[in-house]
Amino acid sequence: MRAILGAMLGGRIDRRSPLPYYAQLKQLLVERLETEIEPGSRLPGEMTLCEEYGVSRTVVRQALDELEADGRIVRRKGQGTFAAARKTDEALFQSLTGLYEDVQARGEVLRSRVLAFAPIPAPAEVAAALELDEGDPVIHLERLRYVGGEPWVLTRTYLPADIAPGLLEEDFTEQSLYGVLEGRYGVELDHGRRFVEAVPASSAVAEALGLRPRDPVLLLHSTAWDVTGRPVEFFVAYHRGDRSRFQVSLRRHRERQGAVPNMLVHDDR
Image (tube, rainbow, N blue to C red; front, side, top):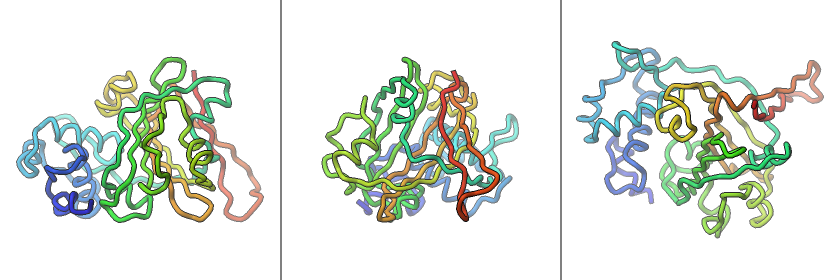
């Protein structure tokens, strides 16, 4: 599996990899943004990137759309594309419930359309979150999630490939991933860490959620650990900004040293 990503890790697109070209290019550019390109610096133009990586302009634009949606780059009309300023993290902690459980608790029904469900080599960000080596096999589950018949959240979830033998046979159109992991595979989830920020929707995210490109969406990055301290899930989720808000419970005097606020996800309709 590592060999599949060999060319990509060397700064080239791997034509044999199951990862789409735009996803590979996105990761290559992320690495450059983290190691070579300073915040505020201009990125090479689209045609330069096409020539450098041997891909089409469509691939380049989709990769840049994803980077813009993640808040890593800023596009300025007539000026070019620039590395975004690095953001300061806010310490937010959410009760470790999945979206399915959260929606169900409000008496609503969450349904999902599974867009992708397959093993892939772990990109760098995923590998770091799951404490794996880049290129190790992980399970990728991408779902477009509906509440009240409307698209609400686009979620890309990654799990270690050995976490639940048989998981790829499950149907997640109307099941809770956490419920399946705990109830059928004995995975004991313990705690998690989530970060939220507002970003403009990329073309792909906007199309999936029924928005216009660059409409605001709420972007979550989340990692969950089991009771042994092993990271067992990493996901990136794009919530419609006109359908969601995050409620944060604050306390003046903390009950224990180092406690942080709970965060609950709410539908804002």
